[in-house]
Image (cartoon, rainbow, N blue to C red):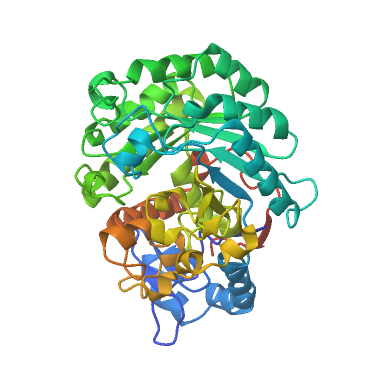
Length: 465
């Protein structure tokens, strides 16, 4: 993969009529960004030098010299990938009734669930598919997902035991069923564990994540965090809602104090109407989110220990080195159906778990059709063919390839079609502005995983003039 970065050129830039570079105000006192949207080529220049740089000079010369390479790189990233991961949903059922869940309530109450034989059969079929195109020595990833996958604990543990040498396994869980024996099984086998927690105390966390009878589960998650202390392969997802926005800074303090290695502060996915009722306003979400990120930086500078907010780190990497990004939601087309797909308990395949519950997006059934055929089905092509250039309001946006106008499922359900924006446009815009300000100030490495750029090759770097 290549590292595409030109963070501090001061060769001057201001938009000439023929310049391919578009100015993008990042709210920085001295610098402004310029971006060529199609290739995601960018630079940071002094505001008083903008006109010169757009008229000509080292940055523009570099763009013209590298444009074809960057265009090919973006084309490969957007349209040349094959799936290397599957979100494996062994059950539709859940023991919680979270206020923003994208899985319809009837499915979570009494939906289908795989038995052990079916899980093993599915893994064998998935192994056969991935073996056909994965590079030698690289294992595909299976993330047991839900609803709550540990309701199928016996079945999925049998799958992990049987196929541990053929997949990298992960588990996303609400933590209520993570007892000592389960944690020992998972950690001894190096399974990635993702937990969900929406606040630093029960009064906040239990507003959105609770059992069907209304009881909260904060204490269960904290016990799991304590048991996982020191295990490098776990993270915590916090979904940002109206209920916890005022507490996001406290939340990162809470996670840092418990030595959580990585977390995510995710927006509320608005696929179902109930979730839209708890989503925060874009501007309030952005303000709280950036304040929380700043707090992680202060904690790192004080303690020497990072709490990486993975979804923000991914935005930074999307700017610095597009092909090194680890998450594929913030790209167009998104990763659904291209770099991963989702398996439902009845064997149906969907581009992403967000589409489970929307029958129109089932491409076919794992137990009845070849996976290659399903991935080319019209239901999948509707998602893999969604291009941000075709979305009104995004078509002229200079940062469209740092954001990707997610999420297609919510665009379809909330805004009326694949050709529409998803939610949180202004939030993503402010996130990119903040990322570019960090780069301008030379602080960005403090928000990234150590060694994030291992294996990258710089393809473009322009220093200060």
